[in-house]
Image (tube, rainbow, N blue to C red):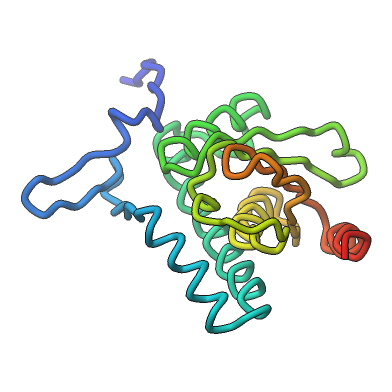
Length: 196
């Protein structure tokens, strides 16, 4: 006997996040633990790292964000494939990016949208609204958004199996709206050199 039931929304906040009142732990339906990071802690990480490492803090944040984004993609991929019994590669773009928006929202990462207008040149424009990652930043320096840029580079590198990079290109509305470019490292280096 085979099941013909259509699975519901994996990343529904009511379904996806559960808590254990005894331990205070948050977890997913796959029993993976979730961590709630207060905005004060996020702001303190940025400030402390800047104080301790100066300009090197941006590279440290980007490197950490890249590793975090890639592992986050790999975990999400496993959960999506287990729940929907279908490879991520078999999802059409609309389904996948809709899931991506729901995944971002349920993890408190904000609302993410991807613009494919320059995809033929190998460039994606990613807008993050109400970012949970860049929430504590109070700087007008594009490198201040290195953690989230690294996170996006890691996420899209995991998705495409390509070595991609990212940088913030418009943060005038931060934290309500930050725009990033995700592309090959050469494109990002060129973009950053023209902004320096």
